[in-house]
Length: 110
Length: 123
Image (cartoon, rainbow over all chains, first blue to last red; front, side, top):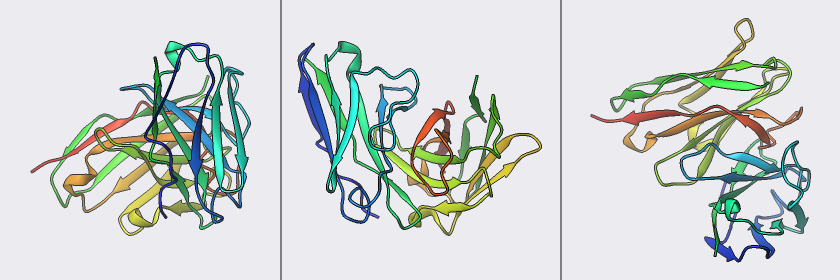
């Protein structure tokens, strides 16, 4: 199963909104609503930010939102803050009894 | 509160096997599934497999299918993973992670993670 495609890096200034895309195929993102997003700070454990395309776990800021259109899922962070600087990974169920991650996106807050 | 406590780091020779434990507290393993993820140094996250809490159904990533096994011991509320025929490129941090809610498939949605176990494969 090929990895989902994410941009290697994105950047934004404090207070701005940014969107990270995650492109798959009709065999994964396009056909299932099991898309998740993880945030990982250097040397830290990944943290679930979004699941089931757009649901937020308890404790995750409302500044984080998820969506999907066709074979592409998106994570939007509004009101960007310095502490949002991290690596972000998307994940999707693939339908072949498997899950797959994207390659990860490094978010830089300018 | 939910915690996943993993066993300590391991150093193994090529061809050997490694077994990592993941002891859950704050919830019972037969309620929600566990996934295993690894991360090689400086690399991204990689799913390895999932074991259902409800019926112990398992699913494995194709690249690990022939040398990776997941089990759970409900009596001790502990999950285990074993990776065999270790290679140098199996050097990574291995994580266990709990499902955020019940799924009957490998959702990839995991809200609590263990602290990670570094497995180093070296001759």
